[in-house]
Image (cartoon, rainbow, N blue to C red):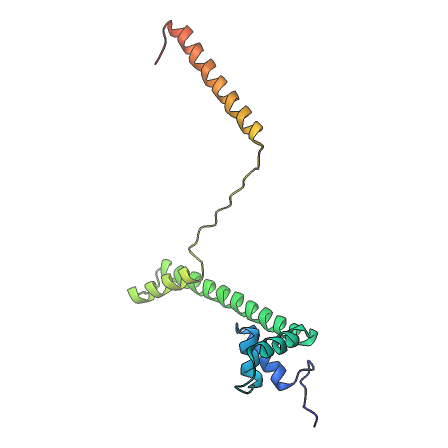
Length: 159
């Protein structure tokens, strides 16, 4: 008996397995969901069979493509939410009629989609301990020189 395969060359059970893995299930749980093994099937056997399925290129490819599609959908949704919030806020700013519930909903949606987050860029430079020590000594010497010049100008020490 021949099982009908889809365009990607997967059987319905293999396709279901791929959808389950892409949806966040473990490989073993996805195998149990898609293939419905007997209760007497050992856990080690299920793990082995699930691992063998994931090792197949066409299944791995399907999982990757499903996950990529989900990522694109999430990004599109976030962009859409961001656009909605910004357009509503612009409308209300220009004198459109608002009520506090609409404004609060826009605020919450904006926070959820990251409209109101600050982007901070931190740049750090790795320096050797000897460089740091030399920099500290240079700064201390500069401070001492400033203090000495003030003392000589005033004629007395400032402490």
